[in-house]
Figure (cartoon, rainbow, N blue to C red):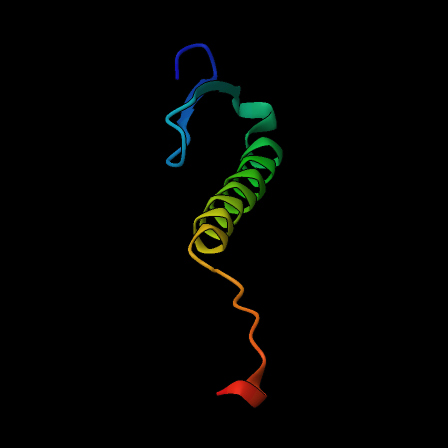
Length: 61
């Protein structure tokens, strides 16, 4: 805080960033958008990895 900077640590990847207090709001908004998108993408990849398409002919069943 003495240098008018704060340190932000992303919860999704642990990346640490020093941010000037002058640009804090703008950068944190952008960072939160990136975190949300990253969490969504990772969850979607995990979900998609568990989905298997099964093709069958229902007439035979």
